Length: 137
Image (tube, rainbow, N blue to C red):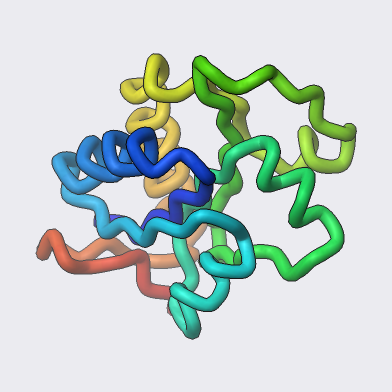
């Protein structure tokens, strides 16, 4: 239903999260860092970008992932990583900060919220096919 970019260095965690998202009928693009995500997305604009907190810090001065209108940035940290305190600007830019994989259900609820908010604001429409993405008007 929505295009979601998942960015982070832990391949096993990304695979698990992407399986959860695909199971909920989302299209997922996986990347190890923000520049790779920007390259992989090319002209596509995800509704949600889920980015590792460490990667957000590294990419603070580099290009950001362009989001679809009404889209949101969600940052996460994994159980085995040391929890990083993000600067105020990055915390403010993010819709939420999650601990993955523990908060997968909260992640799905946040994505549904962002979809509903984008549709209600007239920023896009959701098509019925599982291959569809949020399309801008």
